[in-house]
Length: 362
Ligand code: UD1
Image (cartoon, rainbow, N blue to C red; front, side, top):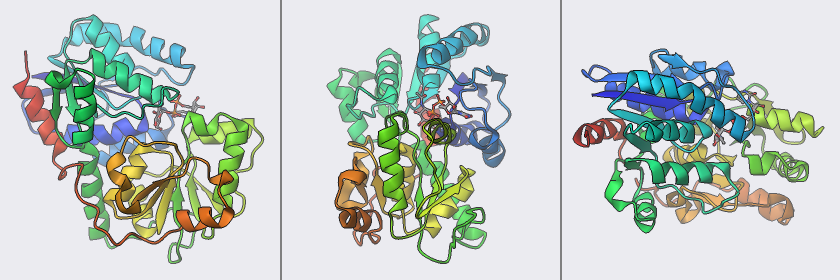
């Protein structure tokens, strides 16, 4: 079996880590195409070395741009590669512009497409990720869903026959990394400059277009983080940095410590060492849950609804409009006493993906 994985943005490289590990040592051919959507070393290269993923077989070097320009450039560059490779499966991951470009290029060449992390829905049509995931699900041949909830969404859209629940590959990566971090001596992160990791602190990220692109919205969110009662290690994504600069907003104010994005093991160590997480990232909401830290999500909805039980994850779309004390006690709340459960599987989803691809070969 020959599979071409198409990736391009940070979270896809984490998921690729689990899939590449499952492929390693098998007789299957696994080729990797990197679209170049993310190109800063800390958003891209670091994951290849960290997870031991072989260098991509093809690098499209597409870079940043408007949605149309970026997606279109990927499509044009992918066509000849997929034509030449002619794989048994094109595997696309998650919900970025690299996902929809990969799925479209493949489906138009009648190549079978499998979508990993199928069936997630926010039902918020203003999110670019929502367009990407809905359109990808509807054009893919095989829908690899992480959860029962995702399976229900696919069934509601008439896609049940193409859907298989495989679990969540992020669990594989998160648990492996957690075990390695704990084995090498503990939870204290080494690269959170400016944070006393022996005292309580929060880990935060902010990168969604709906939170960063409007200056008023971004300024309100920065102010809310700055007002928190403990230091906030804000791992600044390049999009946040670019938008803050563009709008003339200072990031390091009040409780905020301006930190760089972290390699995966450092991120896991940072969350383990923290008292909680504040984020708009889907991946980090789940990582907080898997690592047993409470999460406050700066959005009106979440695709990862399983994290919401017992206040493990709390949605706060407008912290700047909440009474200050309520915001502070919510974001800095203690670890819930209720157990988390295992809605995302046991950490072997990468192997399950491989098995399901084999079973569904045309
Ligand atoms: C993309 C995905 C989002 C995902 C996120 C993970 C889409 C529509 N969005 O958002 O779903 O959650 O990745 O990080 O696909 N930039 C750099 N260096 C880089 C990459 C980007 O400086 O290596 C800056 C550029 O200013 C660029 C901006 O970040 O314009 C946005 O990058 P882009 O890839 O368009 O979207 P993300 O916000 O990263």
